[in-house]
Image 1 (cartoon, rainbow, N blue to C red):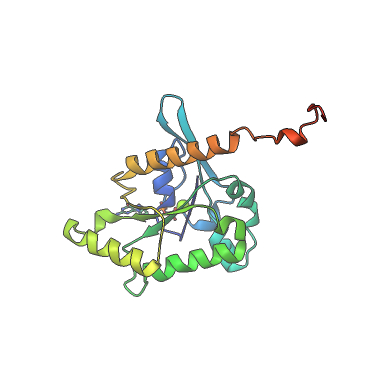
Image 2: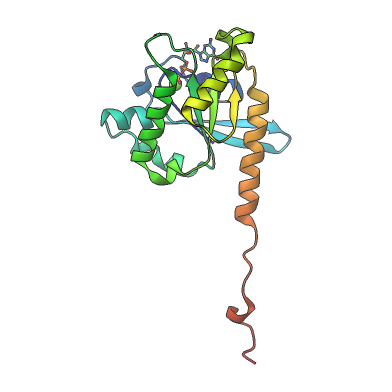
Length: 196
Ligand SMILES: Nc1nc2c(ncn2[C@@H]2O[C@H](COP(=O)(O)OP(=O)(O)O)[C@@H](O)[C@H]2O)c(=O)[nH]1
Ligand SMILES: [Mg+2]
């Protein structure tokens, strides 16, 4: 599973909350040139790898060309989580516009990645009073025109992280099983089939 999102969205905090990785929080995005990989343990013999990919979007949009360093990791992911800070510090910043920009970069960057399943993870919900959350989430999803699954979390206090991790595991497992399903061979084309 790979994490996408603007700097400060909470990707490093999330990977710390759910996996054994210990990246630097609130780190300047370009200081990490290597993806942070972590193992998420879901249950006995149930785990998956999470990759925080600093620089993919940020680097690509700056023309820094760092993105390709992470492509290899990203291409191996079966699922992308798009992490969004719903309460940006700067009031002038519209988180929906930022999220759209990320998706635009992704599409420009690599059509294959753009087509991967991408779930929306609305982060920092702890900053939003309970009674305001439903409206905020509804408005975001509507304006972002998001069709897939949506998760509401606080990476900081781990609220909502467990259901997210379980859903991710199930998705990845299901895809893995589907990929390993035996390919049916048409007997007419099997080499050991008698020709009569
Ligand atoms: N209140 C709150 N702050 C958060 C949450 N997640 C991350 N932060 C803060 O947001 C800042 C950026 O987090 P970081 O994980 O480094 O973001 P990244 O740039 O996407 O990796 C840090 O100061 C975090 O403590 C959250 O769920 N709630
Ligand atoms: Mg980070």
